[in-house]
Structure formats: C-alpha cells, structure tokens
Length: 220
Image (cartoon, rainbow, N blue to C red; front, side, top):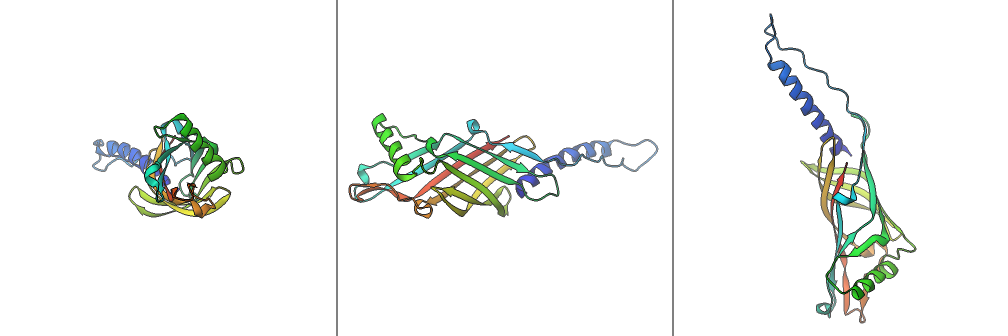
C-alpha cells in the first residue's frame, strides 16, 4: 500500500540522513567543504505477516425491536484469521493487504450463561452467517485514498456470506521497517451481504442491521 511504502521509505531515509548528518558535521582536514553524503541501500520489498495474538478484531451487534429491553447487545470476537501486507520495493506498484477469516471462529464475549452463549453461537453460525455453506470471510485491498497524515481510506473487496462488495474503510496506519499497525472501525449493513438480521418473537426482539467492526491489526 502506498502509505505503508512511504512510511517504510521515510524510516530508511531518516536513518540514512542521521548517518549523513554525522559525516557532514565532522570537519574535514584541508577543506571547508562537507564530506559527500553516504548513499543508502535501496529499499527492499517486504512482506508483513498479521499477528493475531497481538491484534484484535471484534464486532458489536446492537439490539432493536419493541421488546429490545428483553434482549442484549453483543460483543463478538473473531478468533481465527490470517493475512499479510506486501510492501513492494521503492518505485514499484502499490502494495496489498489480505485477510482471511474463519467464519466459525466468531465467539461471544458477553457475560452470559453457557446455555445462552451456545444458543447465540448456533444462531450466528447456522442462521445468520451460514458458516457451513460460507466458511470463509475474505478481505482484499484494491486501493488507498484520502491520505491525511496517518489517516487514510482502504478501498477493498469484502466477501461475506458468499457476497462480494467494494467497501471503503477509514483507518489509521503506523509503520516501521519492523512492524505496522492499522486501527479503525467500520459500520457494516448485514443486508448488503444477503444476511437477514436475526429476530425472534415475531420481530419484537431482533438485532440491528448495522453492526460495528473494530480492528487493531498488528503485522510484523
């Protein structure tokens, strides 16, 4: 991705400049001219691997309906996912971000009974996500726009419930040659992906169509 490439390039340039400054500040015998700058090595292509143990990917599902006071909001964590960020060599085309999620790995974080947790998990897998039929959720970046310091928009193809749609996710990115981090949130409409929001009691208890995805992704 362009911004990540820029961040890695800047880090390398800063390191190179610090070396150059040290050489230029030293007086040269028999000459008033500063020493010629050191030539830094070219930036190499790099692949960062997403580290789930240091990352978080959660979904907030709000309640709705006339009897919503009888229901609960739900916080759901994605437990199993993998991915990578590819940064090309300086001057090459833009890099890419890929993320693959196991749809069956979504787990309820709420403090509820194990019976309720199991019921919610079964409904989520069998009715809402149909994870037996659509076991994978995939995310593939397409382009990066709206640069504003560390903030940007990641335009990507999201495949969920067997439906692929182009989405624009606002994010904040920080990167070094050793690691990078992406933070942000995105409001997703279930019906955009052919999902019918869960409901019960003739629709008097249901969840909202809009769910909030929060992410804090670390890659090294």
